[in-house]
Length: 124
Image 1 (cartoon, rainbow, N blue to C red):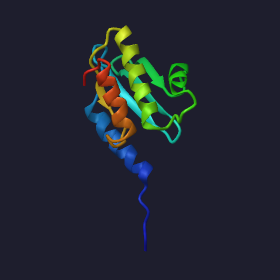
Image 2: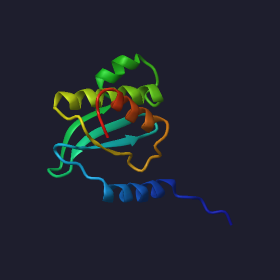
Image 3: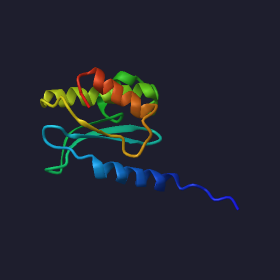
């Protein structure tokens, strides 16, 4: 009999495994990425204090203006979010982060976000 793979459950297991190894500090926050079917989100999190340092998503007015009606779920949208999070972190004096891919494969939108953040001054 055919058994279906629980893709969401598998992603959650991978995410827990990543989070066991990755933690953010005030000097080097964790850049967490979440990818939904319609949007992509990024947060820089200081795990020592449990605070979000900065966040960006395709729901922000800044990214919506740059996309000008284009899709919010593609690679160009992810690049826009990467640029936005890098700019917001640089204004707070953060130049280095720990990347947390959130259980998603480092491919496509997740990779585009990371590459755009690197191009705009973040190091991980």
